[in-house]
Length: 306
Image (cartoon, rainbow, N blue to C red):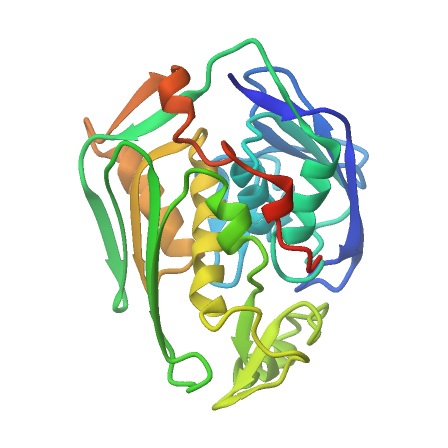
């Protein structure tokens, strides 16, 4: 069955790049509604922004959605990952600013907020996107691939010159609450040199050592260091799930990312839907539903860092 929220969930905080204070309300929605953002700070025109792959304005630093009227919302990947990871298929997200609040830099606050209020089943089957052919895209030494699988799997490899991160690889079967248990508390990360460059360009205005892990060579500058030794690659997997959630339904397939980012994952979705026979839309039966993210999620397993 499709799911929505039992009741509204409210989040407040600053946008990572804009630095603006934002109030965001996740509201229940009917079956088939999907996930849609609504800019409540804009009075006139089309303020609704569906969370769908072809509305992504491909940028390197975050995932930004923009509708036909030019109304946009940025940094949607962490809340989209939380919704997918909690098995929420339908919700309206009212937001009074241009960017989703960064909170602690991970998806854990969103997951705990959603699950504290609960998820409600709807009388309609989930339509899954089954990968039938391998599709891959590459750019500047980075690669993103989707392969056939009977469940959602995510594998990722990164390689950074900073010794605090270095080379990391991880692969996860996303069934049985794996997102909440293994990935949701992993924070966005960056190098100190990148922070300096972004500040000079007027970006990351809301970034602090409390909502991002900042590294400089061998040193981790954020208080408390990493939450996981491989927190960096876990966060890349979190981002990938959030970007894949823009496919329009849960994916049954194996995603493999090698140094991939938001823009490349969206390019992969564009290539996927442009490849004849690469996808099959399948109504989920009870057995298939057990393989979807969000199934088997246990409150006690959600990290308490948020």
